[in-house]
Length: 297
Image 1 (cartoon, rainbow, N blue to C red):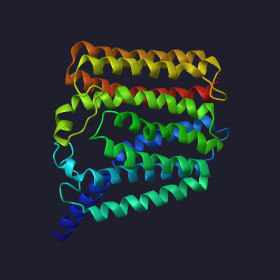
Image 2: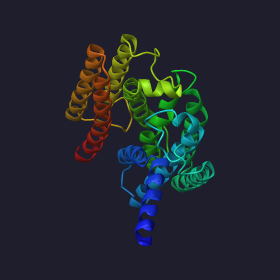
Image 3: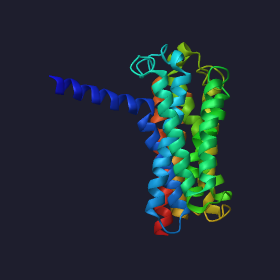
Image 4: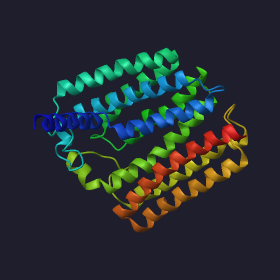
């Protein structure tokens, strides 16, 4: 019986650890960083690749843990978040703070071992996410704009880790992921509107599930599509995209736009949820196409 209880306890601890660091989200961010690294590197250094993955995970995990500490009282009000470790009482604030602090230190140290610029951008990401974006979520819909900055850093971070340089190439990767976040997070804000309202979060640009929000989602989706195909025109330094790859990326963008228009037409939570899921698939496939295109050209 004690073994069973011990196993259950260990399982619960691991589960809470995953939750406090938002493991699934953190891994998706690491994926973006690795894609950026592969785009920027001339010869893959697997040591650097592993360090980037570890450092990136620690930095994102730290941001998520700090976020849950700051929002613990608001999380308790929302159905989506009330069972998180802190509001549910399974983890103390002190424990979460220790995890977040250790993750921050480890993340910065590991990224610094790659190069100084990578560590700097990682630190900036944590600072903006926890100290600017998180407090603004209950104040203004502009919080999404602020949150899109740290959210766009990982794709760019990979290139900087590979080249120790910031220029037009990582800037383009940043812009792509920056614009993509608006339809993505506004779709989330739409289908979780009532739950977010309980916590006092203002996520939609007009503050409502209305045509104005839907139009802005479409506009930012179009911007995302345009930025995604810029590398095919040869304006982005060493970041290239073949015509075939650009066509594939453009078609993926049209699919994303289709679902954005569907939300405008239907104005339903179901349509918003579909757009959110498609947006995740879109950014993943675009990054994969970019990487494959580089290595087969």
